Every structure is written in structure tokens, then in C-alpha cells.
Image 1 (cartoon, helix red, strand yellow):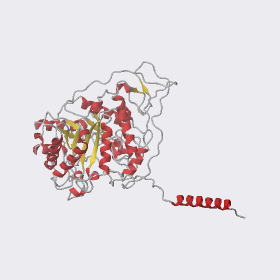
Image 2: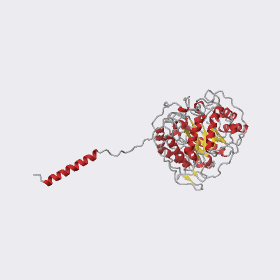
Image 3: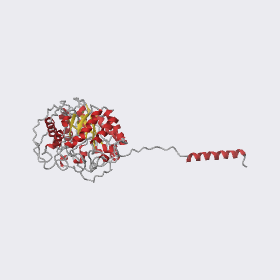
Image 4: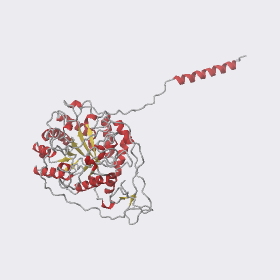
Length: 510
């Protein structure tokens, strides 16, 4: 028999079950997942952002090699490992497998070298500390036989005038890793190229998420005491009637307006602005403005005015031309600079002159054409770091601009040594990893000994981490100091680290 008490219990149990069922069916508070949009990028100018961030995320948190203080006693412990094995990204970009993507300067086959008789700049003695080579317990040198660089022979360099160009289209994790690489070196400058077409793809008024991301990344560098050079290039399609490759806007004032917008948003952290990039190459100058130094000055004038309207102190740098000769796709950079002066460059007394003095396979001390070889890539002044600097200076002085500084906003030496596959160009086999590092340090030293040379920006830190650049034999990978291999840092990275720390002498660079 069912009693009243039993029935009451059953009712309570039924009520409890109904409540539980209702709670289970009630819509839950959603869990928000934020997905950062990936900007659409093209090769060779930019790799896909997501792929690039995955590649960089695989190559962070590197330890510093064993530091050996200057002492007459040798350590008894073997050096620690510089990096651990990390997988190489497997994603691909649109470049066909095995196809070389050459993005450097081009020298035409019919170029006639001009005479040059500029003397070498004054040299400074190298560091004299004669620290014995560190050894292990077994008495074997810890500097490997394949690393013939003597630490006591490195120059002492002033980090305040040393800069690196950095690829910045990364997610937060990838960017944090790059910032760590920069911060460890304790150099003075970083260069970031602002791809205008990515930051304002639709119209002149928008401030996109990519715009804000770049702003935050620049602020993170400024907060660490680094000075910032931004290079503005690549007008968006809405500002150009000719959208082939890259180029300036039809109306130069549109670039000036974009620069003014950037300065309003984050101008207080910008120390220098380079107006455009390698404008003497057709692939960077498709558009309606004349393909000449005079055409460049049409773009330069309004941009200069916009910067000066904001600040008298930001250094304004002319767009560094590529070292090249005349062809269907290029204008000789020496001629181009003279065209800029003929169009009024000398009327700007407070600017720096951008220059890209690449050295190919030739040492930074060498002049053309005293190499005494027939290997190629050494028979033209355009292939020589020192000749490019000297000849630009001659043009500046001849045009009454001797008080202006030369700013090497790109320079470097490429090598395929240690990278898989065949080198994209034969000259990349002329340099090994060790000569790459020695040439870079010597070039910085030459610049610091020369009063008309300002900060110098090595190209590049981390482009080799972009997916498939190595597999596709892209020459940008050959210039990089960081690679997605083991060891992660090439010797040039640790040699630069050692050269800017006079109180430190590493026991090895690999």
C-alpha cells in the first residue's frame, strides 16, 4: 500500500529529476575563442602569416653558449649545447619546389664600370686581449675545427649604431621569440618594413587589426630601449591604377597622409623613417610616377613634409636604391642618386641618404676589381660593399651634401653553407658561415670608423624561418642569422653578440 509519506517522497524525487533535466537542457554560457585574422600575403614579398608564425614558434627559447671570462686559466668543462633539435616546418608556399627565388639586386650584362679612386677609410685596431683558447678536460679545443674564428681577433663594436632588419608579420608567440633574439644581442636599432598594402587594404581611413598588431610590436621594442627605423613601402591597390607587382601611389600625397596617420597613432616611438625601398627596381616602382630619381623625389617631397610637420627630430632617410646597373627592370643606383640630386635632394639639409651596399662574395675591405680571380661576381663595383659607399659619398660631396650621413639601411653577406640543397646562386658558395660572420663584423667596424656613416642595418635576422624558403632555395634564407635547423643560430649571430660585449669572450660560435 502506498502511504501519503511514500507518495510525497515519490513526488519530491520526480520534481528533483525534472529540475536536473531542465538544467541539463538549458543553453550554457558560450566559451569565446578568439581567432586572429591572417593577412593575405604573396610570395616573394611576404609569406603567409600563419605559416610564418608556426615556423618561428618552433625556433625560440635558445640558450646562450658558455661564456668564458678573460682569464689565463682554461675552463675544464665542455661547452653547453647552443640549441636543441627542432622540426622544420612542412608547410609550403606558392613558389614551385626547387625553384630559386632571387630577390636581390641585379646587374645588367652591358654595364661599364666607372673609375673609382676613393681611399680606404681609416681603420681601427682590433681587440688585443689574448685569451687562451678554452679547452675541455681532455685538452681538446672547444672551438670546433670547422670554426676557425679566433675570439681574441674580433673587433669591439659600439652596439648603439648597430641595427637588424626583422620580419614582423608574426603572431604573439612568434614575435616574443624574435624579441628575445634581439634583446639578447643588446644592440641599438631595429628596422621594420611597413607593408602599407597589408595595413590598409581597403581605404585610406581604416586602422586594421594588422595595423594595431604592428603598433604593439613596435611598442614592445621601444619599451626595451631599442631605437626604431620603419621603412614604408608597397602602396595598396586602391591607391594605384597599375597594380602589377609593387609600386607607389598615383598621388604622392596619399603616402604622406598614411605617414601622418601612423605618426598620430604611434609617432612618439619612431626614431627614423625610410621613405620607400629600392625605388630603382621596376618591381618596387610599378605605377604612374616616372621610373627615375626625379620620379622618386615627387614621392619624397610630400612624405618629408608630413614627417616634419609632426617632428623636427625624426631622422628622414631616402629610400636606399639597390646596387644595380641600367636594364629594362632597373636604373643604375649611382645614376639614380644623381638624378635625385638633380631633382632637388640637396635642398634637404636634414636628411640621411639611404644606401644598400651588398657585398656578394667579396670581403668588405675589398675594392673592385683587385680580387685577381675569374670566378665572377667580382668584376663590377656594384658587387663591392666599399665601392658602393665610396661612390655614393663622392656623389653627395659633388652635390654639396657633404654634411649628410650615409645610412646603410640594408647590407649583408649570404651563404648557403650549412643549408640543405643547392645554393640559388654560385656566389653564395663563395662565403661559408664563418666568413659571413667575419665580413659582417668588419663591415660594422668600417662604418663605425667613418664619420659620415650613420647606423647600419644588417639584413636580416629571421627571414629564413619563413616556411619553405630553404626548400625553395630562396636567397632571403641565405642572409638570415636565425635558421630553423640545429644549431638555430648561425655563427654570425654569436660573433655579433661577442663583438658588442667587450667583457665577454664566448668559447665558440656554433
